[in-house]
Image (cartoon, rainbow, N blue to C red; front, side, top):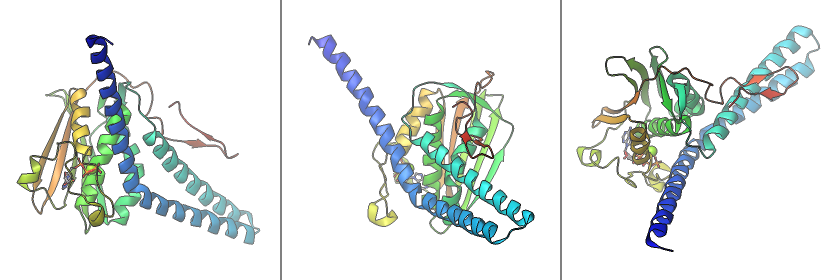
Length: 274
Ligand SMILES: Nc1ncnc2c1ncn2[C@@H]1O[C@H](COP(=O)(O)OP(=O)(O)OP(=O)(O)O)[C@@H](O)[C@H]1O
Ligand SMILES: [Mg+2]
């Protein structure tokens, strides 16, 4: 192989390794959520079993109708979570399209609601309008999920997570902030948090180690979108990450792919084009 060929081969290999790193970090976050998602599924199954028993015991229409309604709701919730998780875990493409950032964030929240609740983290959302940006939805969701999981892990005894979205028409940027009331980041570490493999999470402390890739990849992803990522932190008080992405006037062609699963009464689950 000549030198040029070797160069091209090397570039292809680097690109491939980069993709593998992205996927490894993505699955590390799924790992962090596994316990709470299993827990939620258990609750959903308990609901379904109990209402099915109720429906079998009572022959009157009103009770049976109520039982079926509860079963349907529980099933729909479960379907929303599995669809979200499957769509999140899939290897992403490099396609970019216009998306409603509020929808993007809401889809991520479906996956973490139970986790936050289990760790006594109150969630507050301040969404102003529906800012649109041309993004790779899967990458941006990975960035958001890492910020939320980081925030939760920083609030050991519970706290408050505030997620805000607004359009800044003066700068032409959409702004998403993820703010926690956790332990904060010491100035020493603050300089290193965007470095690859910088992590303070060890397996024995958190029950699960971090790859230290979350924020490094977040910065790459956001900058590849001509955006900016910024951090503000006060030790013992909390941390905020602010993402800025260029606003677009393009109209979204579709939703994020795992929204609004429609379940018809015959039990088949249908999905909007994803
Ligand atoms: N909200 C936060 N509060 C306090 N510290 C944080 C916060 N977010 C990140 N950090 C610090 O930055 C480090 C790097 O974060 P990053 O997301 O890159 O990796 P990680 O969370 O350790 O691993 P992974 O994301 O792969 O699970 C963390 O280990 C933690 O020390
Ligand atoms: Mg992380």
